[in-house]
Length: 274
Image 1 (cartoon, one colour):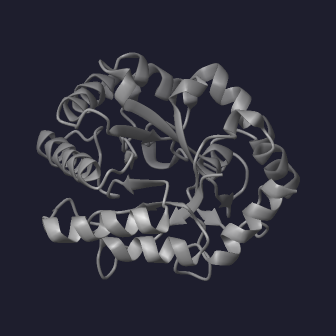
Image 2 (image 1 turned 90 degrees about the horizontal axis):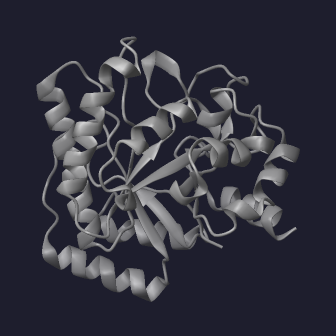
Image 3 (image 1 turned 60 degrees about the horizontal axis):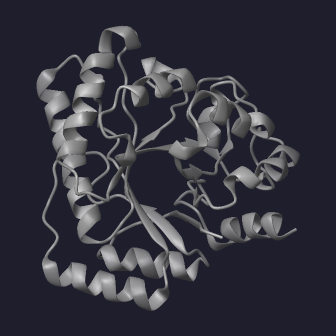
């Protein structure tokens, strides 16, 4: 079982490994810089060496980066698209250095223009990022909740974008359960819809989150499991689906306000084991 959470890198990248280990997880997701800035900074080689040694010691299976919140490949500003692109390239190159799987990111918002008017620039930007990414590092598109003209809340949009990517071996999809629920996809039939629309071969990782908002609300707001709007019976059906058996699961639930806790991972472990 690959089960973990989004944790902080405060104090150094290696500290994120300590945090997920203390929570009982064996995979993790982090930012590699401030999530609210497109600016990046270099991590020194000795810190990367320290990180890799601890990763091996703690037997952490996989690490994913999450692109910063400001990334928007659908922006009508060429300068902004370029800055977003460069941020993701930095993340991809650092992911390779720390032997991470790759970078999960949101495509962004076209602000009502529609996918047909923005898909060419989105695909061009993604292909550029992939061409600038190390060989075995995946760029992983996350489905959106649907608010504010965001791209990718409808699985057909993700399928259309992926179909136009040059090197599809380097592309993946992160399936967020809260975003899917908010977009009108019930959890108990989610994997069938994903398989039909996108294809299981593209599923790289799952963000397992309850929803603080109603079904088909198009609002991105996560909740702790058992405190949100997704029925726990649907969660049990989802976790028992053999189609996700080998897919890493990352929690992004709010916890007590500062992110996932050990109890949140333990809760999912019990459901899987039972």
